[in-house]
Image (cartoon, rainbow, N blue to C red):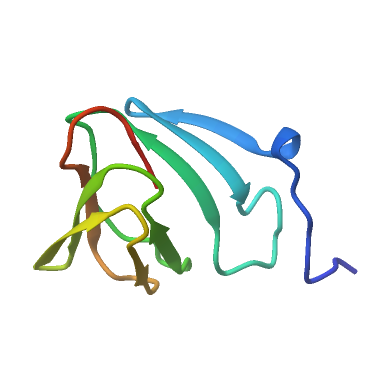
Length: 106
């Protein structure tokens, strides 16, 4: 029986490069099977973005660590800055784009 909790140290993170972005997965289906929320730190290069997409079974929380994000949720857009966040439920279309200078982290 799997536990319903897990500690993840930095050295245990799963790393993934996707479309010029670097993902630092803390919680991912391969790390904790029964989770319906996942956590990842993303480094987005200047001018980069993550086009509109949905996660059919995953809830997502985006928290801006550094920089400015142009965050779209369906047809609504807001600029998010350091310390801002957004909760996105499963099956909700969203896209995130670097709206500032330099790399940013969320």
